[in-house]
Amino acid sequence: MPLITAPFVAPPDTDPPGGTPVPLPEIGYATAQYTDPTGTVWPLTDVGSGWYTLAEGVSGLGAVKYELASDPHPRGGARLRHAQPQPRSILWPLFIQGRDHMEFLARWRALATAFTRTLRVGPDGLRVPGVLEIARPDGTRRQIEVFYEDGFEGQDKQGWGRNCDAAVISLWCEDPYWTDPVPQSVHREAGSLSDFCDPYPTVSSSQVLGDTVVQVHGDTTVWPTWVVTGPASLITVTHTGTGASFALDPDADAIGHGALLAGEQVTIRTDPPSVRFENGDNWIGGLNWPTADLWGLAPGDNPVTFQLDGSGPGSSVDLVYYPRYETA
Image 1 (cartoon, rainbow, N blue to C red):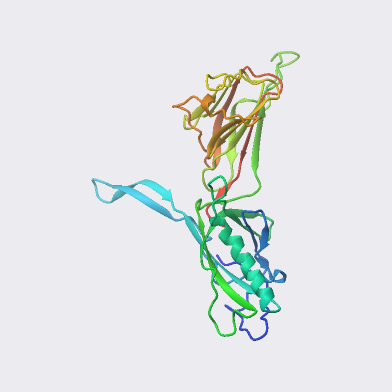
Image 2 (spheres, rainbow, N blue to C red):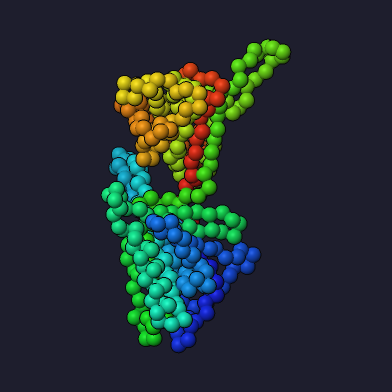
């Protein structure tokens, strides 16, 4: 899946690396950028920046690789038991140039630091990945978290290293799936209490708590975040298709808060698992362990039940997820 970049303009005394990219008729150009762990954004397909991606050589943007586990079948052959997604490696060739040696060297060093910074351990003992983003001509974007692996080296060609050079960077991805940076949200709230027959037969909005269907976009399972707003004395969320469920008791012994009051919020994350009250207090002990299952949502329609005991005006559940895809 090649990227189409801006036309190459060779600096003096250099040969165009990899040929000249050509735009695809009626499709246009894909653009790419990299955000390092400090939040600095580095354009990767802009000649004016002094560096850009070469069209030939980009790889690792296709479907996820899987490791298959199977069991022998008594009638011959085998039966697939499990498919495990494997980490992804992306090759990304960059050409870097400058008007003179010192400008080229400054850009080369800055980019090398931006990528290798992903391997540094922070004060919290964790490494922060960078984010590679590819935008298509229709405005859609897909991102993936990356760690620098290797490849920020010169090409050792005569004349290179003076005011230009190329690096073929290898980026390693813990999660091999691409994500849409635009979150999808689902809102459900307590319906107003009314007499079914007064003044005439009525039905509740499909946006109220209770049985509902959550539609998930993308190619694979997503792991949502739930924000529950009180009042509520017990929160139970069930995937009625699989039977997986979890319950959160705000008055559990490990918490002792009592029922959520009107307007109070608790946030439940499924990956990595965490439960936080609005002031930051850890409420993970309020889940119904060991049976609690912080389940994911499969692509397509998911039948879900939102049950808030003690609900009233203002009670609501907000589900947020980012669609995940096999390819860029």
